[in-house]
Image (cartoon, rainbow over all chains, first blue to last red; front, side, top):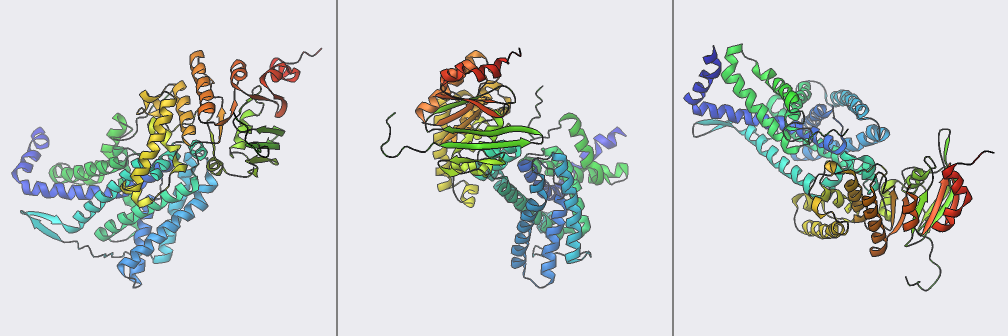
Length: 309
Length: 264
């Protein structure tokens, strides 16, 4: 029994290194896809301290809008631009209708408001574009090619590269720029931010717009992989353990957390799955998140939680 | 200071008969005062006299239901806090509002936000003019850091600093905006004697070196008398005295407010 848990899986790994690499790449790519969703959460949490329950639905909404436009014969590039405009308009609307009336309220109230927002967006999206499963084809083929005997999926590689570029830009943006600094300031202390001349409204529109655009990217990648349908909004649930691992306030944390979970669940599924009858992929992330909550609640890269008494 | 030729300059800040009410509490009642350029004005009064409310009105956090606020001669009564900041009014808070997740340096840099301009894209790439601008502002901030003697904690996380230093960093952030008017809400509250002396020195230094006009709220009377040019006393939301430190110290209404009136 012990041997089956601790030895034979590793023997299997070493026995077929090519297959191991394939599993790792698959896990890495899946992980980066989770990261894309988690990023949207991190952005809004960093800039407003609000956990945006609607992020998953925003992914769905962005993908639905893009597919809907393309179904009506709009070319891909124009469709992308229009969807971006829609996501930015959505950010303006959210600021005006949801956030502004709730300034200086408890965070839990803002959180509840985002739950409402998620129901609204879900219904609104389906009202506009219909609720049937749609196929999204933006010209990235879901095919594989071989590199030294290892199968690599083009879509997965594209997703991975996109995530990497997005993260680099966002990380620099947050750390080094005037607006990034203003975003962090707003997250930290509304009053103080106002007193040094930061208009909250503008900052919120900026951050929800960026989160909307990140949702669009995630929507495209997930939509191309598994079709645009309601269940797309449920991948937000997979982003939660990613956030707990990486820390709610860390952009790089969202990436590393996503990769650890993606790779971990693929390895678990392939090598340990047969021992428990499979389906490790479904719970691995949550168990790992639970362990983290017990021993390192701020996550790998989150800000240390300091309690002053 | 040499008096400039020409007509007498308008006061930097004029508060004309403002009133503020919170529910049944009359926080301010027809309070008027003015702050002239280059002055240090202290606002004193017992707890609940309306000092902080007055400061919040001037910095745009509250709006009075009557009265008027003029800044550099223009009506600014209904401005929002960030607009007030853009006019050149910086402030600190009674219970220190620093960005605790950021380093001291980043905190102070946020004070320069209004002075910074530039392209979103260039900034994201941290390249060209954006980088030059960042460096220029950094140089100014370093001057303030030197001035307030906080070189050693430049990289420290603001949330981990002891109280006295946090107050100093908050002052630094306000100064980074190069304000025309600096509002300090109890800059020395909770400090020991040594820290208070340091803070006095900095406040006088700021006034002297940068020519900044300062309005401050303070409880410690000896401090107030030492550093202010003028003192305004409030009690129960009303102004009860306004004059030089010596005049206000001798004012019967002020003495009554602080010591209580004997009811014969």
